[in-house]
Image (cartoon, rainbow, N blue to C red; front, side, top):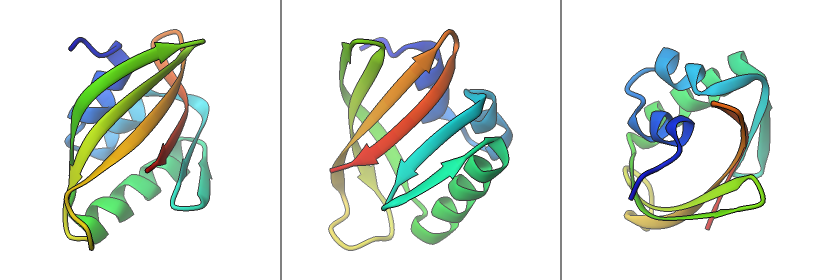
Length: 104
């Protein structure tokens, strides 16, 4: 499976700087009922999630429709029910992520 470059960058990011580079400056992430707007907030969200859950995500399937790339991924980490399969819906704008929604 070939992921769009910003989506591949998101899943392969090993640090918050690499992750931030995949997002547009005015982007937002919706996860666990919260919305994180802008690069600084997204970096803080990602670092907090990594510290809390020590998780990894393995893309399993890609579906692209109307400017959105939806990736089904197996997420493994320190949380009840691990591993879990989650959906990552990426709104793309050029070579950056405009928005990301994560859910079951």
